[in-house]
Length: 95
Image (tube, rainbow, N blue to C red; front, side, top):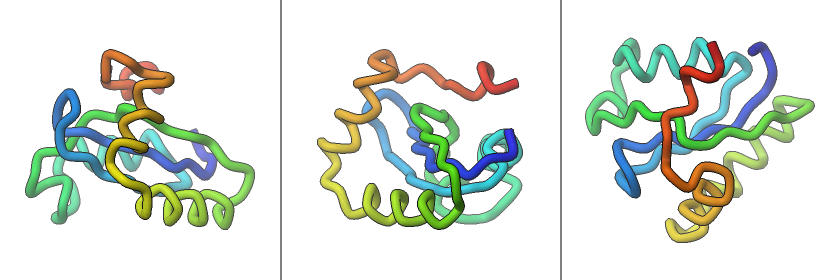
């Protein structure tokens, strides 16, 4: 899936959240799941893709990521639950 995307990962149902941006969602989520890169998601075991949004350009994806990162936690939870109320890991559906 080579397309600019903003995504949210969760450690568990309503657990720790991570917001990121990528041009290759499948590859990037694989990296998170396999702790291929040191950082926040590896340290806190945040591996479940619970939400993503595709964009036409990387610039718009980056702008959206910055906006979402500034949101309050309940707003992020509302966005996730609007499309994924059970907080299922969406990664298998991408493969």
